[in-house]
Image 1 (cartoon, one colour):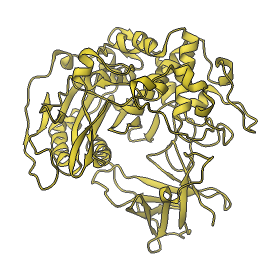
Image 2 (tube, helix red, strand yellow):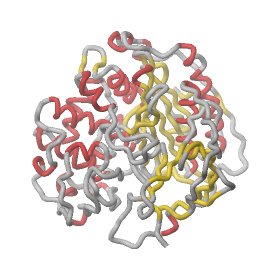
Image 3 (cartoon, helix red, strand yellow):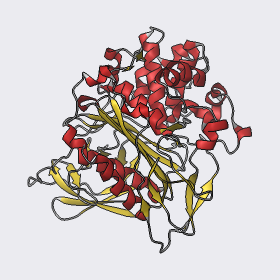
Image 4 (tube, helix red, strand yellow):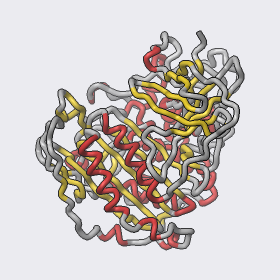
Length: 500
């Protein structure tokens, strides 16, 4: 069902936005409560009152200002699906609105959560050990490149294998799709090991794909088949698949990806990520992802089906590597978004055309998934929508401002997630300039953000902050000869001061 249908012109320039909210009874699956989750600690219903209408209002604004063609928002709490609502168009040219219960979206790297779940199933079965070197499970060699320590299974989970980032993970056409092992073994696709493993996080699609390949090897099942048999089918995720291209009913229900060209949203071809399948090739509907979230909130159980033991699920939520001392860490596959009040974990996902995020609050038995497609602004729309829901359900207050001694932090900072065999492009660096004694401005991609100091080398975002939060933070840290910068919402990467 489409709760924010945008009856607008296909041009974004100077057009009025008219929203029609079509409220109807949810399907039967949305009224069912899982007893296993109902017995867990639950969120105060008062926090959920009016949440659907709140999301409608946020989405009305996003569609009007953020170049969003279509979106889905799915919320679960206390063992049931509260709602799965569609907004805008699944196909603009054919005037097909997004159906929150049927339309498929591309969750991008949220797909990795399926991969990590599958990997942990192998750990439970004793086929894989977290402290084993990955070489034990591979049938090809990744050159050490001068590194002395082995990459362990757990290093894949928290993105610390020490790989450079090569990109080049999409296929231009179906004819360019090749088997997972063929892609991974091709020397031109193997990233260089540029640091010792376990030292610092640097997001790695290749490392995530290696994890899926290990699942394939130790289980004896092709990766997509394994996910179907052991996660999607048991949980009743009937539309979800890693396979590309889509066929039949899945293809018919797939939302079209869009980009903005001369003020108009133009349809894009279906994106192909199967060459590195475990890292991000899934397609799924809102209710599919709701069932997955319910299983993770239920300590691995949904109804009479169990996909992981409770102790394994709890292990996945525990912290692994933390880059900045006062910011959030990576967990076992999850990114930690907030450490208390309550603890929030999740994962984002971005393809060229879709922008998604899944957020879970296990202590509160609450979770949600959002996905948008459209112009460049739809990425920011995804983030604003996610933050709006977090701030509405789990409001926070800004931190007290720091009045102590301020340390200089100006300079340009470069991501550690990049290709190291090519000359870096300074245009992608983050430029930091002081703003008074206790403020600073970061500039990236032509956008400036203002921050105020809340502790030694710790700052909180002011630009774009919503009442109730969440409030983004950044921290400077490291010795004088290796100064680093990290953001709270990005525990999977860091930025290093560029030396003059």
